[in-house]
Length: 179
Image (spheres, rainbow, N blue to C red):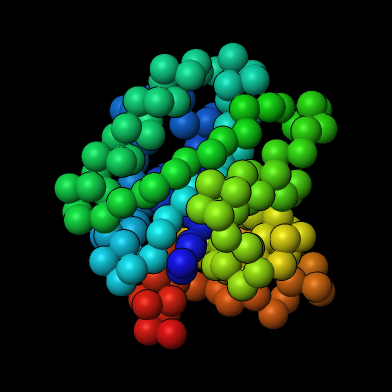
């Protein structure tokens, strides 16, 4: 199995400092839906691992989150792709759970679902916490410059300065497909 794990906000869709709270606010980044379809067509299995502390903060409810994810699935499916599994951490930063990135719990949930090891699995994110979660599992952290990515690139700690960096999900997908 060739698994790729994607962060959601800032990688697939536009991020917001005030949180993405509804399907109307969930807007795909240019080229992201097509990139996911291309990865699917190339034989990759795709999972999404996303911190969603807006649930814990009461900014939106599970129905709103489900509507956002349904919109994402519908757009990807219409483009010829498939996201097989979405896992979210619904805790706040102060909850100190094992699933909120940079903790690796969400990645382990996906590994269990796909019945695979994470060693070498591409994990594409725009934030340091995405890269740290990937590194903690032996996965392959990949940074995109969308969302928080440009600032993350500037602030990369020494142990993560060798990660692959791409302008966006489309560029990362093209590189992974070509490997």
